[in-house]
Length: 107
Image (tube, rainbow, N blue to C red):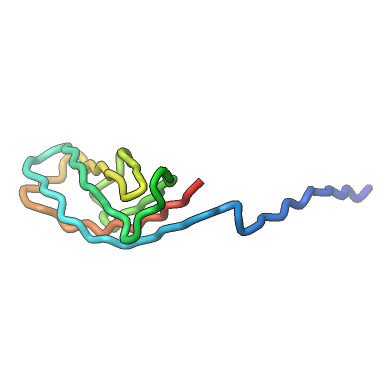
């Protein structure tokens, strides 16, 4: 049986590929006031803003199993808006504390 060898091109990554990174863990209070499916948005500010004119790519996760991230919008050099939705059938009649972990990378 012949041996097949695969050759892959190696690409080196230099430090100037990613210019700037911000990470953070923020706890926010999300004011849910109804039962059933409801969406709420919260604004997250970076602890240290990116330079003016730099719009980063943002990735986020939350610590709640009955909430889902449905959008990351309004991204600017100072922060972003995170939209959360509760799971159908879960009743929330008060504010929920949510820990958001984010990674923001300048292009």
